[in-house]
Length: 115
Image (cartoon, rainbow, N blue to C red; front, side, top):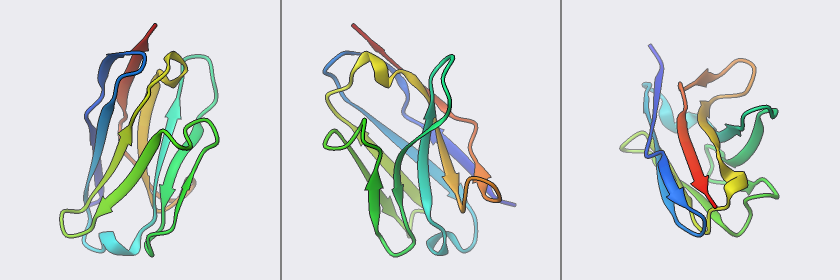
């Protein structure tokens, strides 16, 4: 059935960059909106960036102008390019397909930004 696999996380110094990928195994991938969330230790999950099935993009205030979300529908993959990373970006990043409540989640990928 539906499976999402995030990749690209790791450790980086402040000011550096990372690119995350979320590969989806689903037949009708192009009909889903995709959202990147993150959850830092001791914090609630927050929305990072979203892209609808029509290509409409939105960003959370904390990452606006630093992160870029995109999707490659033939490859069933969504990307999150993260630039100018800050220690407060440290979190587990999750890919969601189709909605927070009733959609599908990946297992997450850890991003650690050191000072």
